[in-house]
Length: 57
Image 1 (cartoon, rainbow, N blue to C red):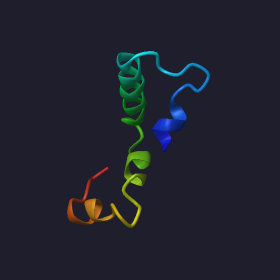
Image 2: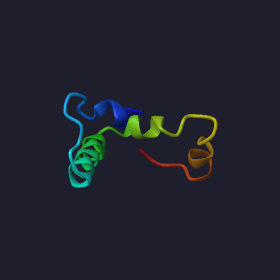
Image 3: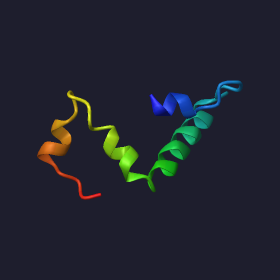
Image 4: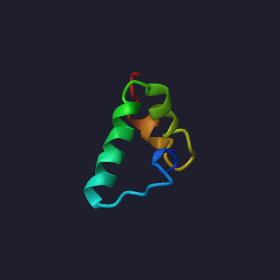
């Protein structure tokens, strides 16, 4: 959901390359925010990822 919200709405990507660049930029910006990345694994369907493979953020 965060990725969808971060993409510019007035000007959608005009090519697959442009969309890929926007997506890479989104994840690059998130690298310095481990609390946000950890939050992706808090839901009941994906919680097992943290329980079985604890990440040391």
